[in-house]
Amino acid sequence: MSTETPNPSRREKKSDASEVKTWFSSTVRLLHTAVTDPHEFYKSCIRELFTWKFGCALVFFALVVWATWYVTHHHDERRISTIETKYSNSNSFLLGRIEQSAEDIHRLEKTVAENKTDFNETKREKDAEILKLVSERDSVQQRLSYFEAMPANIMMLHSNILKMSNPTNSEQMNALLSSVAALTNALADVLASSPTFELYLNGLLITNNAFISLQPSRDVSLIVKNAGVFTAANVVVDLIAPLDSTNIVAVGWNSQPSGISATIDNRIQQRFPELNHWRWQADVPLPQMLYHHVATFTISTNLPAKVLPVSFGVYSDRSKVQNYSVLLGL
Image 1 (cartoon, one colour):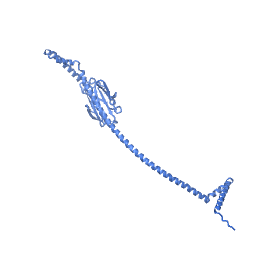
Image 2 (cartoon, helix red, strand yellow):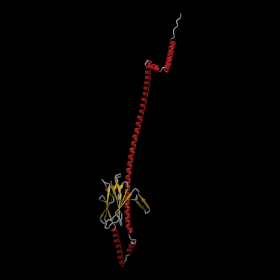
Image 3 (cartoon, one colour):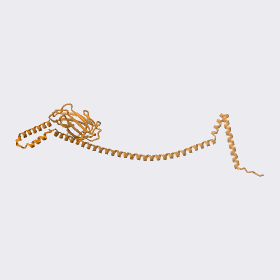
């Protein structure tokens, strides 16, 4: 009698097939129950939830979810750390560039300020030279006007004097000398009759090329005095300064056209537009040896200059212009 040895692999296959068949049949029954009897289907589902297989599957699923989250989270943290390191390095580099740019801008601003200061100083020196040249030109023109006002026959009188060498012409010589003396006296009277003036700034007598400090106030008070022996009509005071209407408050003064005209060789006329002109005129005649208060003007505190060159001109009817170049300390 032969004994047949069972094959383990075939047995395992049969058991697997039976288990699949059993699972399939139970699944079909469960689906049939879900269709025919939902209440019984619900109870079956509850019973299945409390089996050890379901619990193991649930734990396994939870472990898979946790492992997936852990790996993904760890990877994301590494990426975030790498990105933060890159951003930190980039920010440090950009911050260094910004600081370097700020230092360069500060250095350029300092250079511009120094150049501006040098330019303003040079401009003030040029303005002072221009005012001095204008004053000298006016003085020369005033001196020339006296010679132009002399009678045209003065040269003929002089030539007649030289020709009278004969003693028999002594009477003509005396008459001619009398005429010359009379003409000299007339010219002296004309010159003496011209009013002359003195100008006071904040109580100080102004002299040409003087320096006067305005501290602590920038208000400028002027007084004009008739230093002559005749009454002066239509007394006028001119103010010329490298300022504009935003840097000076001159109530009672009339603004004149900007710039100063200069004639060179009687042909060329130049203007210096950086100089501005204000004019004050007295409304009453000024008798001899009396004073008249001129309208006060104020220099703005926004003016950065420490020294301001200005020019004053004083005159009236039948008088020459008296010019004063003054440096005002601010």
